[in-house]
Image (cartoon, rainbow, N blue to C red):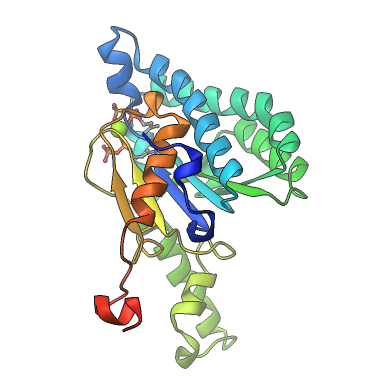
Length: 248
Ligand code: IPE
Ligand code: IPE
Ligand code: MG
């Protein structure tokens, strides 16, 4: 297991994204209801956030609720929304104490009104913090985000604010929810599932992927450090040869 001293602070990713998965299975293994897993996942959110802050990582994006998750039983959706509201409410002071700025991506207007209000309040209260930006992906799906960008760009072309020739990767990125956030260099998924589940498809074009069997409620700071260490041992070639990357 890695600890913080094993990590090369000069080779940190700027942005780490996490698909927090396995809460339901964790609860089931303990003979409990799925919501018990979600409740225990909150400590893992704290651990990952603290680990990222201690290292000096600038952005941490957590996939907390996907567009597809609306299709879960209504009782689970309701419980997740309540957990979100109560957690944000409880954690605002800690976020401020640790200089963490909260942000959100996704179809925020589709969230229950009290949830939107709590979120807006926490975003506003933490807006001046400069250490880590903690981005919650809520009612998020990458295909939704891409279609939204295409529609907005099309409208601007129609009104002649933009021409077709203006459309390039940078411009397109500016129309995504992540417009002010660099692409994640590292994407972590817990619980042993080897898929992306409609998360940041455009932004992870060249991310390093790290999968761990750990279920999310068991994910601790050391697991975050393990992922960073694994990332630091990858050779990121971006299409070049290994010799080119090493500079010979
Ligand atoms: C991740 O855990 C949390 C959310 C998707 C909200 P799951 O609830 O997906 O847990 P499993 O995958 O069923 O174990
Ligand atoms: C992905 O997990 C979404 C979140 C972690 C919020 P899911 O558990 O919903 O994904 P699938 O259904 O296994 O692909
Ligand atoms: Mg799951």
